[in-house]
Image (tube, rainbow, N blue to C red):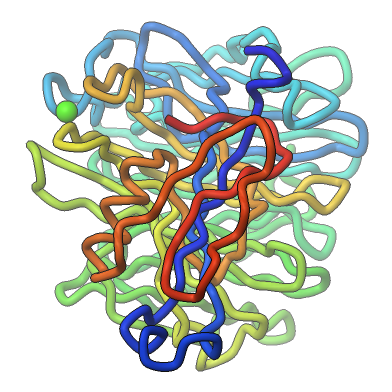
Length: 411
Ligand SMILES: [Ca+2]
């Protein structure tokens, strides 16, 4: 794609348009932005379960690749436990797309639970983790790169369930922290010496799983949790270092799954993927934003991030992971079956650079943005695409598509 074609479009839609008709000139325009995600992996086998870390020089992306599944949810079964952990490294996030994938050469790098990985930069070394299903034994394994080679550390946590061995890892306060799902709750444990052991007693988070993900915010540690009990609930927990315990900070009812918590500039973002039955199964990504992380966190939103759909074709966009790079730019990595708009393909890792107003909606296809604005009762946008910036709406009561300098061209 030539640079001249690398264009991003922002659909400016007059907010509260009926009110605007009456109070023309007083309503502030809300933006509904459209950007196209970047594809990071392209194996013919299903790839999912990504995690990413920066070691001060390079970005390390880890994910699972199935040994067998080449289909997708609507024609296959990606929920198998035959994934193997692969990784890519690059000095920029953008460089990950063209980096060569490499399999972690561990003795036990097979039979990964749903391909779900975690990662941490601990001391001077990069770690990755996954839960391994071997018959009736389901344990957490880790591998660390010592600058030259990968080294395997077995059975960091044991006795997990073969159908719910969710986990996450992070470096915090001079230790590696692990969270694992057991039958009735999530449990955390930590150690300063993960190569040799020394794990603390497991502490219950106090939720009902679900899935969860760590978020380190400076000197504070949080967990983003989806409580899968019916009715479901999104939860954010804060870690009390002195008492080795978790305190619920915020919650809201939700039918979603797959939580992640991160920051975009000064704003906190809780993103998750929701599954509905539309078109044979559609999973899409929403996010909540707030500039403070307290009991009122969930009062704004949610807003759309990625639709999991183009027109009548639906697919799965799932397992979002927020990440902020060394320059302060934030990304949402996710697993997606998107391919040509009318037909999905096998799962791959993708990311969106989050450069839109996080309090407004975002789409990955212009068509879906137009559909969403129509469904909201707004007037059909007047779309203008040209080689020069088209004019802004002449009045508050019309909409237009404006051209902005950017990298990707949606369809
Ligand atoms: Ca489909």
